[in-house]
Image (cartoon, rainbow, N blue to C red; front, side):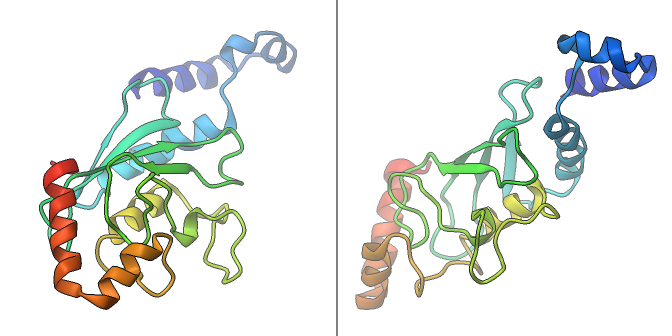
Length: 184
């Protein structure tokens, strides 16, 4: 992160002319990267205590991992890994998020797809992505999937939701089996 931030400072400090800025594409920084520099700094100070962000390459703020370790509910004691990729068109489009940990969850498919309204580009209920949202909203939304946003009424993984409806205790046991086998 320091490398990109210092690159932005150098670019702003030098204030090259418009002609030289367009001819030297190596010094151009995308709007996405400028936004991410600010958002990542804000995110680092406001992460939920159950989350940890990891940036494998400090020069690529648009690709990072998030670990969520719920401290309550069905998923307590698990550690769930998410991969977050921020497209070039950010913040007009939402980040792409995938759960890397196999999980038994009504709103997360076993293949990693996630049902979270704020990650939808177009949402009927008006709670989808908007340019006013930020990475902080995404992180808090993913964290909430394990507590207050756990939704059995509008599931992505229908089998998990029906399992919970049929037998809550057996559902809890299956969740714990998945945690033991995949989320440690």
